[in-house]
Length: 106
Image 1 (cartoon, helix red, strand yellow):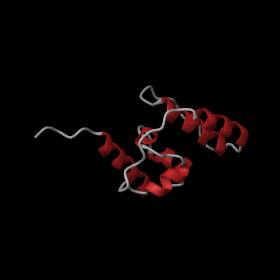
Image 2 (tube, helix red, strand yellow):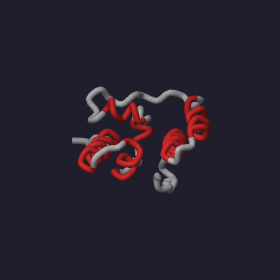
Image 3 (spheres, helix red, strand yellow):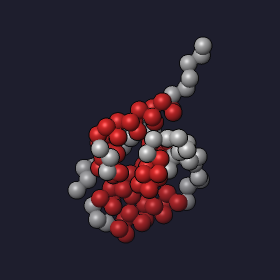
């Protein structure tokens, strides 16, 4: 069973909806998951993950289709909802942080 997550104020509404759907899936509540996914489908589209993003296909298959959904993700979350091993989850979190961090001015 998935552990409940704590909503962070920095999360986007899309990330909140995705996590509600993933949590409903983990609790074997397909109707509830479908309802959350329905709300998510009504949202404007986001840019897809970059083609070179690590584990891109696996993340998309799990529902993490853009950086909007990964912003704030933890290693534990990726292990529970996407089945990542600790090292792979760490790689995804680091890549997300790098992609969302503005470059420093030279």
